[in-house]
Length: 354
Image 1: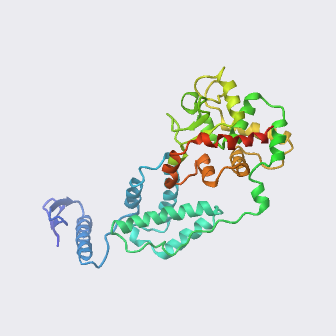
Image 2: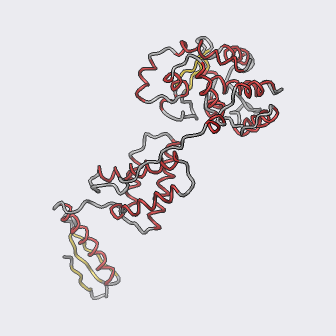
Image 3: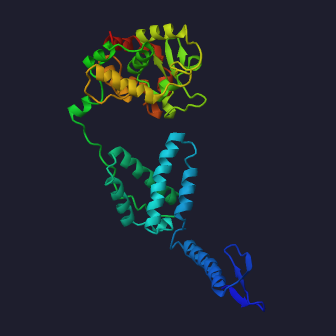
């Protein structure tokens, strides 16, 4: 046990040995502070004896565990890090509200309460499941670190995604008549080029915005290269891919290159990256003129590509590759396939506009 001795000047001096055997000799203004310090050291020593005897696991504070867990995710892309941090911040707030200091204080009842808060918030099954995946991973890290025996979330199952009705599925993309109506509307040629590119390549809007002549356009091999550029990072590691140009896209880009040979392929008025908000506004305006009743969005062009490519001879795994959805296990397989072999199949999509 540590010892407390009152000095002539009225202060209290403590002497105590910690876990490592190092002696602590300190002075405090009040007896209660001196006692609190000794109690802290003695508690740590007592807990360590129980850990050594296999009676309890090591403890870690919620804050320390979150910090440690984040450090295991250094390879995540910036967007994914933000999503993880958003979930962990909600978990941190929950623990604060419930006055949970250490991770081993978090019980199954707490897990049920946290999960109910997420599912009752109106979040989609996909979002809710992401929250669950992150907190489960957080507690798995505690088990790996030998600080917990079992996760308090082990009994909670992921939500099943709602099966969409045929009407809901059709709402997510433009059908053939809607596409033809859209492109019959009189519009600025640069806008037409953007929407044709989105429809016939399946590019994400961020990928289209960041597309550059120097690194992204290969007119010799008729390939669009989606790559990580300075200032742009693809959504996932498997999003980097080569997309074959349809005949229409090839002719369009060939004509554009004559007057637009450097920098972004699709430029704003001042030559910078084209604005997503501006394109969305134009998309909605043109769709309204075309008599399209569906909610017009830019991402819906990607869904449209995904839906209509099924009418070509493109195989399911080839479609995954073109969309940048391919699993990690497919990476090696598809780096051996020449994307140019898909060019003829994809060109059938040009009929949607003609």
